[in-house]
Each structure stands twice: as structure tokens, then as C-alpha cells.
Image 1 (spheres, rainbow, N blue to C red):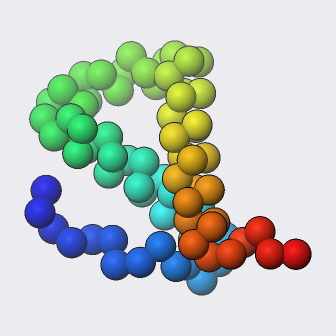
Image 2 (cartoon, helix red, strand yellow):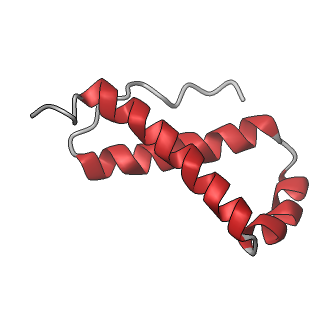
Length: 76
């Protein structure tokens, strides 16, 4: 994938930041497994797995921490 799609981690709202975290997570999977057929075949396995869904949520959370830090969401 050579397209430049991530121009900035800065978002207007925390909601947009969370959505960016989801996009980062999904793009990471696509970069790791670029074969769309394999991705779709595996999706059925992890979509019905509590462990798989928990792992996906953890990846999103880590990406949201990154976006939140870039946007200073934790300011008091």
C-alpha cells in the first residue's frame, strides 16, 4: 500500500480521535495481511471469538492512546 492516507493524528473531537484509532487498527490488519480473500475468510473466526474481539479492542485502545496523546485529550 503506497497511498498516503494519514496526514495527521490531530482530530477535532475525541469521537473523531476514536474513529481514527479504529481506522489505524483496520489499516494495520490490511498491511499485515494484504490478501483480501484471506482477510475475509479469517474474519468469521475472530468475529465469533471472545478472545479475538478482546484482542481487537486492545489494539484499538492502544491506537486511541496514541491519538489522545497527540491531541492532548488528557489535559485537566
